[in-house]
Length: 552
Image (tube, rainbow, N blue to C red; front, side):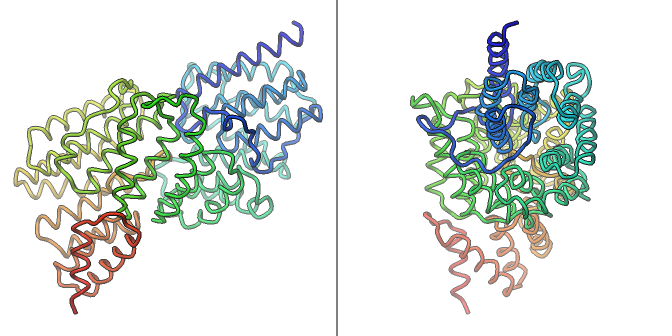
């Protein structure tokens, strides 16, 4: 085949990978750089390959974009590597690693895996001039081997083992260490509270962060490494650095929010996501009202969450109404579905507006919600909780049945993490139904079980945080049952895991006041006032805090 024909064929395959991956990746940037501009600040990457000088420069650029999960531009960049050097086998490796998608949203869909396997076949066919590059190709090939039949978990584990061997064989190869750390994080079990993989990844990445402070992958993957309640404080240095390393990439502007949301730095979270939101919107080719981008929606969910914690209800409502007006999204994927479900659920639950929660409906109706049962479950949970807390047991039971059906569908699809999350949601709705029916012991038993189960797991990397923490709800139930001392203990436990949440602080203040601990009540009410110093709305809870703090 003529070299030009080969390049055209590769370009077509790369485009197919873009289209396939964008429909399934949970956080994969499907956009070019802002129209009329080229990415200027992507960070610094030096991934040595045995290709032409022009191909080498473009390869580094492509890898810089990959490390910030900016997939479509990265795939185009790898295709340009082949234009410079058609015999650069590592360019095919790069196209294949794009098909792998966002590792924190694994597994990729079957079509993406098929396209990636084809790119890997090209990489193996062309080969590479150095043993090191051939080892990279062999390691990634493990991930795509028998991908249409072999279970994802076993292939991911095999890839992690293969990358560990590459990293051990080439200890001075920075990229090998970084990619191994990435796969360690991606294959960590959400139920492993020893954080074995994450701490191993941190041991690799932290020294590199000191030595290569402008490498986008190091800062990015450190944020993912520490994106857990127990580890989040360690992620602040990388979180505060990353947006400045790769400010041309919307995801780099957003990613620090994963840490800020963990530690309750709401205003920093809002500011970063506002920049990401604007960058994402600027890339939308359609300016038609009612069309949105999934990455802008992702940033909007984080912003709504952050605004609500600070009683910036007008700002939150504006975003809520913007999301509600969107009838079509540029890519239908889990990120978009999650935001569409979570934003209205957050808005209702953060205001304890049970009537609004009980009336929630999936929107936009045109979206293929059957593909995203885990997103629908969030809205159904909020609706069932709202109905139960209003005392509408019949409606709550209807939502409970829907939650159970969604859980069963996810179980059948082997979506273990999200079926587990649905279990917590089911226990919560059951608990409030039991309370409405005066079965108080059953209510508390279900409520405690949900709180313990939720804390044994963790939030999904796509999400800024649970729409409402289970232990916080346990505190609210204990207050309803006139057990303020026990409620205070639960609110305080909740705040350790989810610091600076408005309803957690208010609940702790109210429980302390009701149990006669005025000193603790004063501290929590004062913290609530400080948290909402830049509010744009008033709430009854803040009037209560002001009145209490005005008393001697």
